[in-house]
Image 1: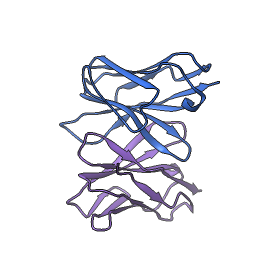
Image 2: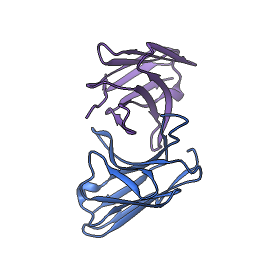
Image 3: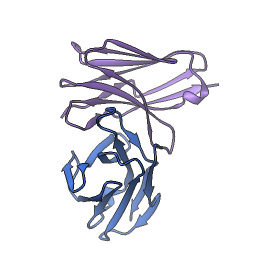
Image 4: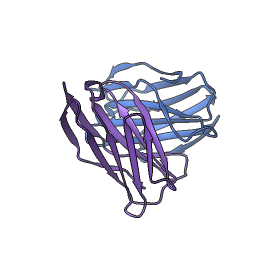
Length: 110
Length: 113
């Protein structure tokens, strides 16, 4: 089964800096999604990028997708303390289920 | 939490006892999912449902069963809980035709002693 794998696993940055996370996967996908999880809470959907898209923006988020390399990146610009969370990528292979990566923990220091 | 509730939110039980977790949605969405989250493993799919009485196994289904007798409720049962099933369990829904994204409940923290 396909599975997202994020890299790096943990990231600590100063407020105002940009944070970049990468995700790789193994098989073909219909779309790739990024989720955020604050400590002790459920996951919240951030952004979805379809396999025929290369880049997508949502507020301070920018996602890229390279299907030839089977990889995606999530960029958070001008980070804030409230961005401290774990970030997961998830791949949708069109079988009504998502395969999640292990997650990236991001700490934004005020 | 997109109209999704999970109960109980916390449970401590002993090895060998049966446990049932409930996921309830208010939106009548077709797809519902049960995941478990463990350190170092991310989220792993246990079972999912694509309609009333229609369910399928995920990647870590051994030791778990599910039932969906009503659109709004998806039950996860551990027939005989083991310590390896200590985890945080999340339910999710997917509106299906409208979007491919999933919306998650607040989670249930289960400890099996």
